[in-house]
Amino acid sequence: MPLLFLGHGSPMNAIEENEFVTGFRNIGKSIPKPNAILCMSAHWETRGTAVTAMEKPLTIHDFGGFPKALFDVEYPAPGSPGLAAEIKKIISKTEISLDYKWGLDHGAWSVIKHLYPDANIPIIQLGLDYTQPPLFHYELAKELSSLRRKGILIIGSGNMVHNLRLVDWENPDNGYEWAETANNLLKKRIEDNDHLALIHYNELGKEVQLSVPTPEHYLPMLYILSLKQEDETITFFNDKTVLGSMSMTSFLIDSKEKISNPSYNHG
Image 1 (cartoon, rainbow, N blue to C red):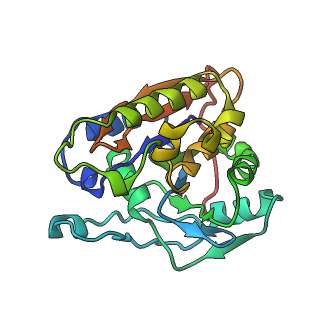
Image 2 (image 1 turned 45 degrees about the vertical axis):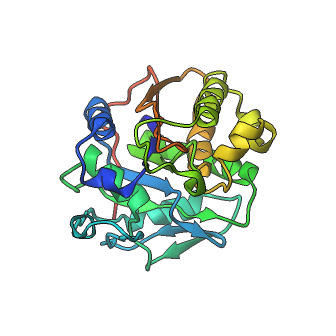
Image 3 (image 1 turned 120 degrees about the vertical axis):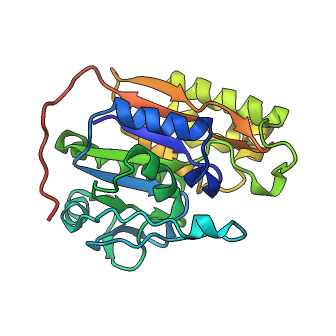
């Protein structure tokens, strides 16, 4: 299966019609239908590493100040206790706990609903251990590689540039100059496969430091890059900075090698 990093931006993307929603839909149509989805969302930070293991995850409305129509959205995709158990088994870097309380936060459902509107693909989330440095997350991700050959779509959902304290609500369609600079710099490192520099992003200059004041929206991207194989290609989409200090830039990692009808038991 391919890999996806999705810049999810505002929760309003869940109910609006805009260029980013179109980008998500087009990507969903362009890749094979997965047997299940594993999502690392910026909005589930944990102490230790956990995976959701319930059969019917709740749709979590983890935000405030938005219209009722957004809170009314439900995305009733099933969970996958079997996939959660498989991840617990294959990860050796740390102990994986099975979570039965979380569900699907808006970092997951607000974008996945555009890829798969029928909500018929099992989804689980992997929590981001906020006590660990970027290198830990990058190395942990490598242990998930076998899932790709079992028809599992692995998605990281965050934003390459994300500084809510500096959001410019009066300028929704453009980014600050420093945000544009950081977005382009990070893209160049991604294209060059310079993962070491991306892991040590605090050393990439003041523009990147402004763009990543806290790591939770950046770390999902490291999970996806860690899983990239040498011969795979990267395609950027939704490549735009908005609201001054946020980047919607997303990318698809895909291989020339295709596997027909991979199977997986989600029990």
